[in-house]
Image 1 (cartoon, rainbow, N blue to C red):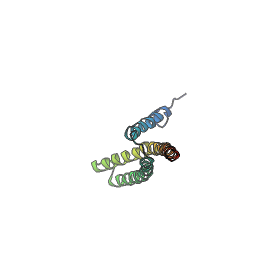
Image 2: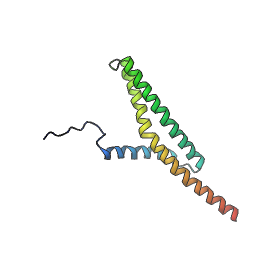
Image 3: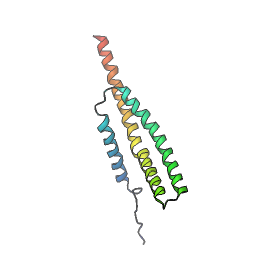
Image 4: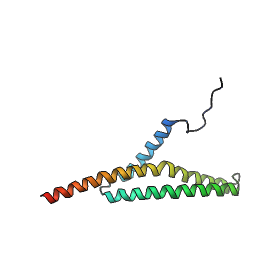
Length: 121
């Protein structure tokens, strides 16, 4: 029986999960002092817009790199920047969206309860 050689992370679900956990930790490192739901709503908007923008830019740069020629230095640079944009779109924007949604819900509930307590007093 021939064994299949693994040459990427596409067959490593634990590695993919750890990549998303680390990206989530990076997002949390920046947003942990936030206390207003408005800040988390902005994170949601930036994550969705960033996903679209970086995905489109990644595809455009990859297409441009293939036209220029992948073997030249310009093609390599364009391909590298396109790959970086792809990784930002797929690894950083989804955790940003998740943290933004959870943070917006949690802080809006806290703000709602604090307004009720202030009006009851």
